[in-house]
Amino acid sequence: AYHLKVPVALPAEKPPSIFNLLKIPAYLMVMAGGMFVVFASTALITWGPTFAIRYHGLTVAQASTWMGGLVLVGSVGGVLLGGYIADTLQARWTFGRALTIGGTLLLGTPFLYVAVSTDSLFEFFVCFFVASFLLTCYHGPATAVIHDLTPPRAHSFAFALYLFVIHLFGDAFAPVLVGKVSDTTELRHGLQIGVAANAVAAICFLVVAWLIARKARSVRLQADMPV
Image 1 (tube, helix red, strand yellow):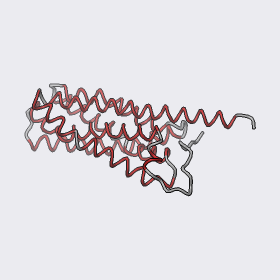
Image 2 (cartoon, rainbow, N blue to C red):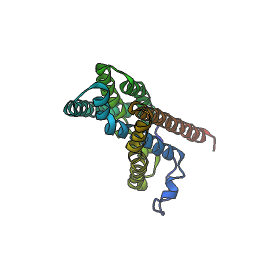
Image 3 (cartoon, rainbow, N blue to C red):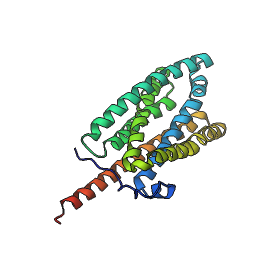
Image 4 (cartoon, rainbow, N blue to C red):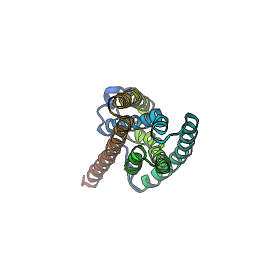
C-alpha cells in the first residue's frame, strides 16, 4: 500500500499553531465537513422527537423510547463498521478514510430526507435508523484523517481546534435555525435544512479524498523523477 502524510510535517523546532494548520486545505475542508454533519445530527436529535409527536402522533414517552433506542443501536453499529471500512479502504488507497466518510454520508442523505418527509411511521423509523447508522460512520475515520493530514506534534491541537469549530458553528446554530423555520413554515421544512447540510458534508469529505489523492500523485511523481 502507498502511505502518505499530507502535507509535509511542520518544522520540528516550531510548536504547532493555528496559522500553520489553517494553511492545510484538506484540513480546512475536514472542519467544514464536520461542521455540516454536526449541524445535521444536532438538528435531528434536538427536533426529532418533536417531529415524531407532531407528524406521527406518538406520545413523548413513545418518541423518546423509540428514537433513543434506534439512535443507540444505529450509532454503535455505525461507529464500529465505519472504522472497519475506513481502515480496509485506507490499506488500499491513501484517501480511503476520507472516501469512507464522504460515501457513507452521501448514502445516508436520501434516508434522512425520507425520514423527515414521509407520512408513514414505519418508513420514518426504518429510514431514521439507517440514517443514524450511516451518519455515525464518520466518527472514527474523521479523527484518523485529521492525524493523517497533520504532523505528530500537532495532532492534539488539530483535533481540539476541529472540535471547537464544528460544535461552535454546528451545535450552536442548528436548533435555533430549525426552530425559526418551524415557526415560519413548518418543522418538516426546518429538518430538511439538516438534510441539505448532511449532503454538503458528504461533498466536503469527498473533496478531502480528492485533495489527498492529488497530493499522493504529486509526491509519487516527484519520487519517480530522476535525480
